[in-house]
Image (cartoon, rainbow, N blue to C red; front, side, top):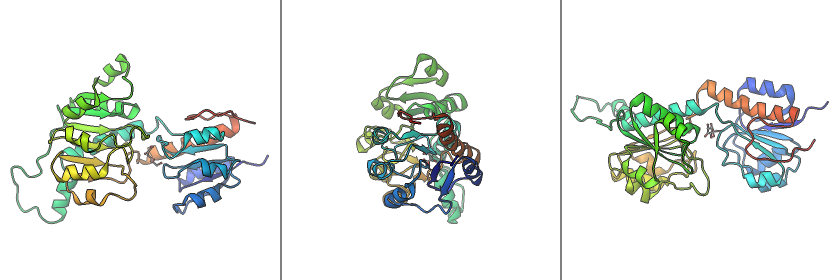
Length: 327
Ligand code: 8YV
Protein backbone atom coordinates (compact mmCIF):
# COMPACT_ATOMS: atom_id res chain seq x y z
CA UNK A 1 0.00 0.00 0.00
CA UNK A 2 1.21 3.47 -0.87
CA UNK A 3 2.45 5.41 2.15
CA UNK A 4 0.62 8.70 2.86
CA UNK A 5 2.59 11.84 1.98
CA UNK A 6 3.47 14.27 4.76
CA UNK A 7 5.40 17.49 5.11
CA UNK A 8 7.81 18.20 7.96
CA UNK A 9 7.82 21.98 7.88
CA UNK A 10 11.00 22.64 9.87
CA UNK A 11 14.22 20.80 10.65
CA UNK A 12 13.78 18.08 13.27
CA UNK A 13 15.91 15.32 14.80
CA UNK A 14 17.22 12.88 12.14
CA UNK A 15 15.93 9.94 14.22
CA UNK A 16 12.40 11.40 14.19
CA UNK A 17 12.65 11.81 10.44
CA UNK A 18 13.84 8.18 10.10
CA UNK A 19 10.88 7.04 12.18
CA UNK A 20 8.46 9.07 10.06
CA UNK A 21 9.99 7.71 6.86
CA UNK A 22 9.03 4.16 7.93
CA UNK A 23 5.38 5.20 7.75
CA UNK A 24 5.19 8.07 5.28
CA UNK A 25 6.52 9.57 2.07
CA UNK A 26 8.25 12.47 3.77
CA UNK A 27 9.15 15.85 2.33
CA UNK A 28 11.21 17.63 4.96
CA UNK A 29 12.83 20.99 5.50
CA UNK A 30 16.15 19.93 7.08
CA UNK A 31 17.79 23.10 5.76
CA UNK A 32 15.38 24.87 8.10
CA UNK A 33 14.50 27.74 5.75
CA UNK A 34 11.61 29.74 7.11
CA UNK A 35 8.87 29.32 4.50
CA UNK A 36 6.35 32.10 4.05
CA UNK A 37 2.62 31.34 3.75
CA UNK A 38 2.82 31.01 -0.05
CA UNK A 39 5.69 28.54 0.09
CA UNK A 40 4.17 26.55 2.94
CA UNK A 41 0.86 26.33 1.06
CA UNK A 42 2.70 25.14 -2.06
CA UNK A 43 4.75 22.55 -0.17
CA UNK A 44 1.58 21.16 1.40
CA UNK A 45 0.09 20.37 -2.00
CA UNK A 46 -0.57 16.65 -2.19
CA UNK A 47 0.23 16.08 1.50
CA UNK A 48 -2.22 14.30 3.79
CA UNK A 49 -0.52 15.49 6.95
CA UNK A 50 2.17 17.78 8.31
CA UNK A 51 4.43 18.22 11.29
CA UNK A 52 4.73 21.88 12.20
CA UNK A 53 6.32 23.96 14.93
CA UNK A 54 4.84 27.04 16.56
CA UNK A 55 6.20 29.15 13.69
CA UNK A 56 3.89 27.94 10.91
CA UNK A 57 0.50 29.63 10.63
CA UNK A 58 -2.28 27.27 9.59
CA UNK A 59 -5.31 29.28 8.50
CA UNK A 60 -8.40 29.10 6.31
CA UNK A 61 -6.66 30.23 3.11
CA UNK A 62 -3.93 27.59 3.44
CA UNK A 63 -6.52 24.90 4.19
CA UNK A 64 -8.69 25.91 1.24
CA UNK A 65 -5.73 25.52 -1.07
CA UNK A 66 -5.07 22.06 0.41
CA UNK A 67 -8.40 20.26 0.81
CA UNK A 68 -6.56 16.89 0.89
CA UNK A 69 -5.01 17.70 4.31
CA UNK A 70 -6.20 15.51 7.19
CA UNK A 71 -3.99 16.26 10.18
CA UNK A 72 -1.43 18.81 11.34
CA UNK A 73 0.72 17.82 14.31
CA UNK A 74 2.29 20.76 16.12
CA UNK A 75 5.59 20.14 17.90
CA UNK A 76 4.54 22.48 20.73
CA UNK A 77 2.03 22.47 23.53
CA UNK A 78 0.78 25.90 22.45
CA UNK A 79 -1.19 25.98 19.21
CA UNK A 80 -2.04 29.64 18.68
CA UNK A 81 -0.44 29.29 15.23
CA UNK A 82 -3.47 27.15 14.34
CA UNK A 83 -6.82 28.67 13.40
CA UNK A 84 -8.72 25.91 15.18
CA UNK A 85 -12.23 26.86 13.99
CA UNK A 86 -10.94 26.91 10.39
CA UNK A 87 -9.21 23.55 10.85
CA UNK A 88 -12.30 21.99 12.40
CA UNK A 89 -14.51 23.40 9.62
CA UNK A 90 -12.12 21.93 7.06
CA UNK A 91 -12.15 18.56 8.86
CA UNK A 92 -8.43 18.80 9.67
CA UNK A 93 -7.31 17.32 12.97
CA UNK A 94 -4.93 19.42 15.08
CA UNK A 95 -2.60 17.91 17.68
CA UNK A 96 -0.09 19.36 20.15
CA UNK A 97 2.56 18.00 22.55
CA UNK A 98 1.36 18.41 26.15
CA UNK A 99 2.87 16.77 29.27
CA UNK A 100 6.24 15.79 27.77
CA UNK A 101 7.53 19.34 28.26
CA UNK A 102 5.80 20.31 31.52
CA UNK A 103 8.65 19.87 34.00
CA UNK A 104 11.37 21.05 31.64
CA UNK A 105 9.43 24.24 30.94
CA UNK A 106 8.65 24.75 34.63
CA UNK A 107 12.38 24.33 35.37
CA UNK A 108 13.14 27.05 32.86
CA UNK A 109 10.47 29.34 34.26
CA UNK A 110 12.21 29.04 37.57
CA UNK A 111 15.64 29.55 36.00
CA UNK A 112 14.41 32.77 34.44
CA UNK A 113 12.83 33.87 37.71
CA UNK A 114 16.10 33.27 39.57
CA UNK A 115 18.22 34.93 36.88
CA UNK A 116 15.89 37.93 36.84
CA UNK A 117 15.60 38.36 40.60
CA UNK A 118 19.33 37.86 41.18
CA UNK A 119 20.42 39.91 38.16
CA UNK A 120 22.49 37.12 36.60
CA UNK A 121 22.62 38.49 33.02
CA UNK A 122 23.16 42.08 34.02
CA UNK A 123 26.08 41.22 36.29
CA UNK A 124 27.64 38.89 33.72
CA UNK A 125 27.58 41.67 31.11
CA UNK A 126 29.27 43.94 33.65
CA UNK A 127 31.99 41.37 34.32
CA UNK A 128 32.56 40.60 30.62
CA UNK A 129 32.84 44.31 29.90
CA UNK A 130 35.79 44.47 32.30
CA UNK A 131 33.93 46.73 34.71
CA UNK A 132 34.46 44.56 37.82
CA UNK A 133 37.29 46.30 39.60
CA UNK A 134 36.20 46.04 43.24
CA UNK A 135 33.57 44.57 45.58
CA UNK A 136 30.79 46.87 46.69
CA UNK A 137 28.15 46.30 49.38
CA UNK A 138 25.19 46.84 47.05
CA UNK A 139 26.70 45.58 43.82
CA UNK A 140 23.92 43.84 41.86
CA UNK A 141 21.84 43.46 44.98
CA UNK A 142 18.65 41.86 43.77
CA UNK A 143 15.34 40.63 45.07
CA UNK A 144 14.98 37.70 47.48
CA UNK A 145 13.47 34.55 45.98
CA UNK A 146 13.10 32.16 48.93
CA UNK A 147 10.31 33.10 51.28
CA UNK A 148 8.87 35.71 48.88
CA UNK A 149 5.44 35.76 47.25
CA UNK A 150 5.17 34.08 43.85
CA UNK A 151 2.22 35.08 41.65
CA UNK A 152 1.37 32.76 38.78
CA UNK A 153 -1.01 33.84 36.03
CA UNK A 154 -2.17 30.73 34.14
CA UNK A 155 -2.36 27.67 36.33
CA UNK A 156 -2.28 24.81 33.83
CA UNK A 157 0.22 21.99 34.07
CA UNK A 158 3.28 24.22 33.68
CA UNK A 159 1.95 26.83 36.11
CA UNK A 160 1.34 24.08 38.66
CA UNK A 161 4.91 22.83 38.15
CA UNK A 162 6.25 26.31 38.88
CA UNK A 163 4.01 26.59 41.96
CA UNK A 164 5.39 23.30 43.33
CA UNK A 165 8.96 24.40 42.76
CA UNK A 166 8.30 27.71 44.48
CA UNK A 167 6.34 26.34 47.43
CA UNK A 168 8.34 23.21 48.19
CA UNK A 169 11.79 24.16 46.90
CA UNK A 170 11.97 27.79 47.97
CA UNK A 171 9.38 28.16 50.72
CA UNK A 172 7.50 30.77 48.69
CA UNK A 173 3.95 31.81 49.35
CA UNK A 174 2.14 31.01 46.11
CA UNK A 175 -0.88 32.90 44.78
CA UNK A 176 -2.36 32.29 41.36
CA UNK A 177 -4.93 33.58 38.94
CA UNK A 178 -6.55 31.42 36.29
CA UNK A 179 -9.72 31.32 34.18
CA UNK A 180 -11.05 28.72 36.60
CA UNK A 181 -10.08 27.91 40.16
CA UNK A 182 -8.25 24.61 40.72
CA UNK A 183 -9.86 21.84 42.76
CA UNK A 184 -9.15 22.09 46.52
CA UNK A 185 -7.01 18.96 46.19
CA UNK A 186 -4.86 20.43 43.42
CA UNK A 187 -4.58 23.73 45.30
CA UNK A 188 -3.33 21.83 48.34
CA UNK A 189 -0.87 19.82 46.21
CA UNK A 190 0.53 23.05 44.77
CA UNK A 191 0.20 24.96 48.06
CA UNK A 192 -1.38 27.73 45.99
CA UNK A 193 -4.14 30.22 46.79
CA UNK A 194 -6.52 31.61 44.18
CA UNK A 195 -6.68 35.44 44.04
CA UNK A 196 -7.94 38.05 41.58
CA UNK A 197 -5.51 39.31 38.97
CA UNK A 198 -5.43 42.67 40.73
CA UNK A 199 -4.56 41.20 44.13
CA UNK A 200 -1.90 39.04 42.52
CA UNK A 201 -0.28 42.00 40.77
CA UNK A 202 -0.36 44.13 43.90
CA UNK A 203 1.03 41.51 46.28
CA UNK A 204 3.42 39.28 44.34
CA UNK A 205 7.16 39.79 44.52
CA UNK A 206 7.60 37.70 41.38
CA UNK A 207 4.94 37.37 38.70
CA UNK A 208 5.21 34.48 36.25
CA UNK A 209 3.03 34.26 33.12
CA UNK A 210 2.10 30.83 31.82
CA UNK A 211 -1.23 31.58 30.19
CA UNK A 212 -1.99 30.34 26.64
CA UNK A 213 -2.24 33.04 23.97
CA UNK A 214 -5.69 33.98 22.69
CA UNK A 215 -7.57 37.16 21.81
CA UNK A 216 -8.64 37.33 25.47
CA UNK A 217 -5.13 36.93 26.88
CA UNK A 218 -3.60 39.50 24.48
CA UNK A 219 -1.78 42.10 26.62
CA UNK A 220 -2.72 40.45 29.91
CA UNK A 221 0.08 42.67 31.17
CA UNK A 222 0.11 46.23 29.86
CA UNK A 223 0.83 49.67 31.29
CA UNK A 224 -2.13 49.48 33.64
CA UNK A 225 -1.12 46.12 35.13
CA UNK A 226 2.55 47.10 35.38
CA UNK A 227 1.38 50.14 37.32
CA UNK A 228 -0.23 47.86 39.90
CA UNK A 229 2.95 45.87 40.55
CA UNK A 230 5.39 46.62 43.35
CA UNK A 231 8.39 48.68 42.31
CA UNK A 232 10.57 45.86 43.68
CA UNK A 233 8.73 43.13 41.75
CA UNK A 234 9.90 41.06 38.79
CA UNK A 235 7.93 39.75 35.82
CA UNK A 236 8.67 36.54 33.89
CA UNK A 237 7.00 35.60 30.59
CA UNK A 238 7.48 32.04 29.35
CA UNK A 239 4.01 31.89 27.77
CA UNK A 240 3.76 33.64 24.43
CA UNK A 241 4.66 36.94 22.86
CA UNK A 242 1.64 39.22 22.96
CA UNK A 243 0.66 38.24 26.51
CA UNK A 244 2.80 41.21 27.55
CA UNK A 245 2.75 44.63 25.90
CA UNK A 246 6.52 44.69 25.28
CA UNK A 247 6.67 48.44 24.61
CA UNK A 248 4.88 49.19 27.90
CA UNK A 249 7.18 46.77 29.70
CA UNK A 250 10.33 48.39 28.30
CA UNK A 251 8.99 51.74 29.47
CA UNK A 252 8.23 50.38 32.96
CA UNK A 253 11.69 48.80 33.23
CA UNK A 254 13.45 51.94 32.08
CA UNK A 255 11.52 54.06 34.56
CA UNK A 256 12.05 51.69 37.48
CA UNK A 257 8.32 51.04 37.78
CA UNK A 258 9.16 47.37 38.35
CA UNK A 259 12.59 46.01 39.24
CA UNK A 260 13.29 43.57 36.42
CA UNK A 261 11.86 41.15 33.87
CA UNK A 262 12.77 37.80 32.34
CA UNK A 263 11.43 37.11 28.88
CA UNK A 264 11.62 33.96 26.77
CA UNK A 265 8.90 35.02 24.32
CA UNK A 266 8.26 38.29 22.47
CA UNK A 267 5.69 40.12 20.41
CA UNK A 268 6.69 39.56 16.78
CA UNK A 269 9.57 37.19 17.65
CA UNK A 270 12.24 36.51 16.53
CA UNK A 271 12.32 40.29 16.22
CA UNK A 272 12.67 41.84 19.67
CA UNK A 273 11.41 45.30 20.61
CA UNK A 274 14.38 47.71 20.31
CA UNK A 275 13.55 49.39 23.61
CA UNK A 276 13.75 46.06 25.45
CA UNK A 277 17.19 45.43 24.01
CA UNK A 278 18.35 48.72 25.50
CA UNK A 279 17.23 48.30 29.12
CA UNK A 280 19.71 46.48 31.37
CA UNK A 281 17.26 45.02 33.88
CA UNK A 282 15.80 42.37 31.63
CA UNK A 283 16.97 38.81 30.98
CA UNK A 284 16.25 37.86 27.36
CA UNK A 285 16.28 34.31 26.01
CA UNK A 286 15.27 33.09 22.52
CA UNK A 287 12.17 30.95 23.22
CA UNK A 288 14.07 28.05 24.78
CA UNK A 289 11.91 27.09 27.77
CA UNK A 290 11.33 23.55 26.47
CA UNK A 291 14.84 23.21 25.04
CA UNK A 292 16.54 20.24 26.60
CA UNK A 293 17.60 17.54 24.18
CA UNK A 294 15.50 14.92 25.97
CA UNK A 295 12.36 17.05 25.95
CA UNK A 296 12.68 18.28 22.39
CA UNK A 297 13.15 14.65 21.29
CA UNK A 298 10.04 13.68 23.24
CA UNK A 299 8.07 16.55 21.67
CA UNK A 300 9.18 15.57 18.16
CA UNK A 301 8.35 11.92 18.86
CA UNK A 302 4.89 12.75 20.21
CA UNK A 303 4.13 14.88 17.15
CA UNK A 304 5.31 11.99 14.94
CA UNK A 305 3.32 9.45 17.00
CA UNK A 306 0.21 11.57 16.52
CA UNK A 307 0.64 11.35 12.75
CA UNK A 308 1.28 7.61 12.81
CA UNK A 309 -1.57 6.91 15.19
CA UNK A 310 -3.98 8.94 13.07
CA UNK A 311 -3.08 7.16 9.83
CA UNK A 312 -2.83 3.65 11.29
CA UNK A 313 -5.57 3.71 13.92
CA UNK A 314 -7.79 6.61 12.92
CA UNK A 315 -7.19 8.56 16.12
CA UNK A 316 -4.50 10.85 17.42
CA UNK A 317 -2.93 10.66 20.89
CA UNK A 318 -3.22 14.33 21.85
CA UNK A 319 -5.82 16.04 19.64
CA UNK A 320 -6.90 19.62 20.31
CA UNK A 321 -10.01 19.63 18.13
CA UNK A 322 -12.59 17.08 17.15
CA UNK A 323 -13.23 16.20 13.55
CA UNK A 324 -15.08 13.33 11.94
CA UNK A 325 -12.44 10.87 10.78
CA UNK A 326 -13.14 9.54 7.32
CA UNK A 327 -11.64 6.32 6.08
C1 8YV B 1 8.14 25.17 21.34
C2 8YV B 1 6.50 26.22 22.99
O1 8YV B 1 9.45 24.82 21.33
O2 8YV B 1 5.50 24.14 23.28
C3 8YV B 1 5.33 25.34 23.13
O3 8YV B 1 4.20 25.86 23.09
O4 8YV B 1 6.39 27.41 23.08
C4 8YV B 1 7.85 25.63 22.75
O5 8YV B 1 7.99 24.54 23.61
C5 8YV B 1 7.92 26.21 20.28
O6 8YV B 1 6.58 26.61 20.24
C6 8YV B 1 8.29 25.69 18.90
O7 8YV B 1 7.40 24.72 18.45
